[in-house]
Amino acid sequence: MFAASSGPPRKWSHRGSFMSSRNAGLTAFRDRQKASR
Image (cartoon, rainbow, N blue to C red; front, side, top):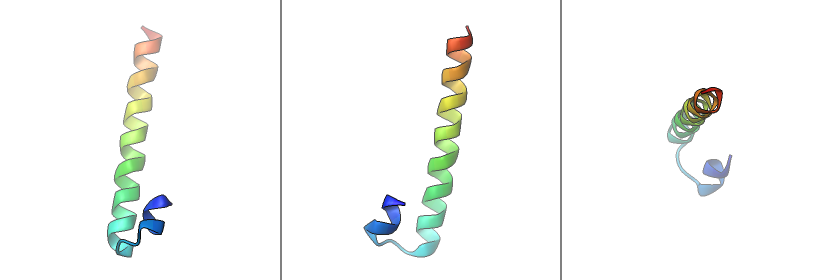
C-alpha cells in the first residue's frame, strides 16, 4: 500500500507487495517455530 504511494509502476508495486507478503509470512512462520520450541 505505501509502495503505491511511492509512485512505482503497477507491475513493480504488485511484485514488491507479493514479495513483502511472502517474506512476512516466512518470518511469522519462523517466529512460531521458535516460540513453539
